[in-house]
Length: 130
Image 1 (spheres, rainbow, N blue to C red):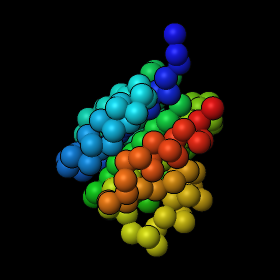
Image 2 (image 1 turned 135 degrees about the vertical axis):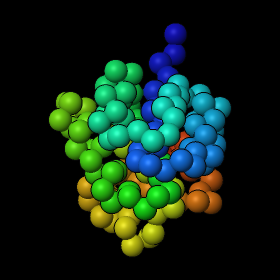
Image 3 (image 1 turned 90 degrees about the vertical axis):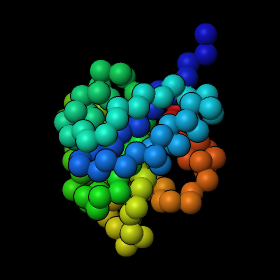
């Protein structure tokens, strides 16, 4: 049996718009990944716990509300506290280009903004998850 890369797609914070996250989740599933979509309005603690319980290799965070500089690094911090240092964390959503270097410095492997072809996300995950 083939081991599929398990990806958690999550929407932290109070952001209630999830169409983009669902598009990405579907594209990842279509590309052969095992996808767990957690839904909207989760705390970083809930996301980290779900990642631990589901033994994922990737956490894909999506946010449109502008709280990415706080919530994305918090998820990374909590994953590390849970011993999940090897989990690839990626971000997406409406994120200003000026914020991307800080997010990467905080442990977000890459950030995919609106208009990014989903094939690019698939390729990135395949290249960075062993």
